[in-house]
Image (tube, rainbow, N blue to C red; front, side, top):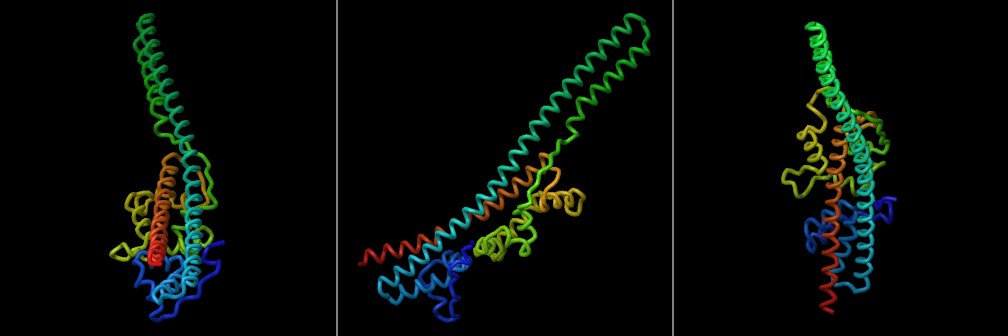
Length: 285
């Protein structure tokens, strides 16, 4: 069950109470609380601290907030673990395809060398036995053709394997709001799609990541058939993948995972500030 569905806090009133947290906590901490729908709890705690309310009331509010923060951390860890699982799946299949490709290349290269050598032996034998240049030349041409064919065909033929991913985080991330509910907890999705306070132009992490994928050519040249093929493959339920396609999928999942991992830092910042204020209060007592 998403954190947002558990003991959902009532929204703060649009008054000075809403600014209580901003007076005591950093911008990152307040933004993190807002993203995780915990700002009402943080505002209540800040108001109690400002008014120097009874210690029992402050501790009760603080304990409720820290419990929600722990649950939020578990949500982030859960979605990261899911994506990491998909990364490992793609990596295993990619290794298998690379092994098959390498074996095929080695085998066909050896066959090319063997056929080339046999052709040279045959043409030389024919020349010595019959002194018929045409037959020797024909044998040499055929042998050379087979050598080139076997020596190069493996490098131009990619090994492909069926690889399905009906639970596709990349599809949800690319499509946006329509699919996100099935894959991302509400707080994580807001973190990815709300304007990033660290970005001076107000871009979201999702905007930056999608732009990065396009600039890096992960999907192929814009408007090309390769781009259309890769979009259908990566953002669908699966299909025939080669090693390069799997490498792209793995890299995109790792970049998505890294973006979500940033939530741990922000949640840690908020939790650290809450605990620090608790420690300062205990010192004063």
